Image (tube, rainbow, N blue to C red; front, side, top):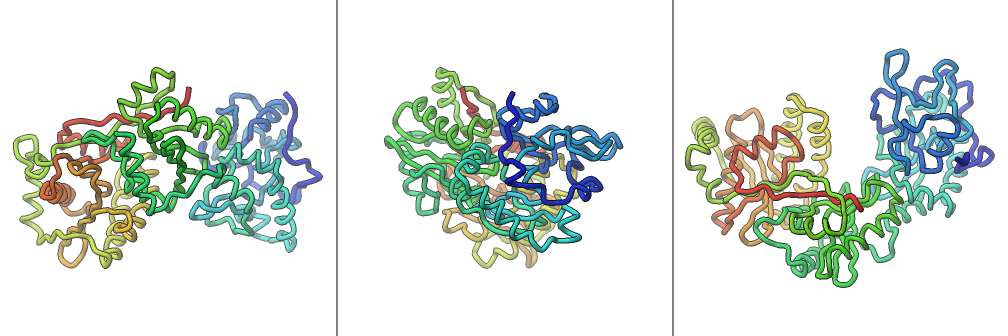
Length: 489
């Protein structure tokens, strides 16, 4: 293997003095084994690292990715496997990756994940305690190098190198050429905006996919709540609509291509595009594949991973809660009505502050409970979508309902119509300290939907959360609509 480095030391010398680094316990040290701050190695940097002595086992993805850490021999935290704790030196210093060469500068997305920014990391003690006066000049040298075609091509092949937004990294400047390359690698791509709803609906019609047992993701409002944090882009070709999303890790498709031409052909075209943008990264994938599509694509040799599916119910059964199967839910609704003075009404713009306050209370209640790591991650990811829905529910054609107890909003829900017969429940939040409120909220939204013609209620998936799966199963779904991810050939 060839010892390859992206930036010779003459072009990007170490900025922090070596004497400072050798007395520091921040760099190369990490509190968790899966820390998002651990070094990222591009494909050729992995080759260089292995040549320099890092065992291949520490690189879980040889096409590029973050290195696997090792336990600190002191028993506290973890270390980069290239770090020698005996002398506080990097064993692959001459061929260390760009991620390390940049430090204490860092590349990250801005808070809206729209722009690539260059900043200085205040976790570095040298930067905190004695901010050098020439940091701006150093940042200019680095940004000039980051703007070269060679460097842009390399980073575009490894978009995971761009870190997520961090409050303790002070932004110095945007890297506009890198932003442009990573946000729109194809001239045919257009950002998805609310005005594209008719185009999306027409593509769904051409694809002939809408039915009572269609996944909730096959609706424009489903994706709207993520627009503020996960930029969506679309393009069309041969009457086929391609929907892409750009995460910090790279590009993927939230839905299969929508169009009349053979699905295997359009899927192959989509993966070809994502390979151009992501390189050989496993982030390239197509989500929300349904059973019929899976059967068609299986013949083409694609790999699939199940993600569970949406819970579909008979709407009248949920509105009535009749029979022994719903005995516990019915009892809880009755208890709420006995103990509380309840008002149910449509959501209005003036409810935003009250719903925000309820969300924060609900989130604190969940954090005080028994959440595993997946539950905490889902909760952290939920904040921005909820705030977006409060502010833009009308723009996104969402129907909202609130439950008022006393003078305060105690529960809210938002949903949309997938078809004239199927209503999808997008968000539900109820004060967890009030017995029966969650069950009452769900029954009331089902009653409202039935009054408007619903025959089916789609309550989305369970996100892999055992507690949510048990709650959804307790309502006796008539079907769990299967959902898969395509991960390539």
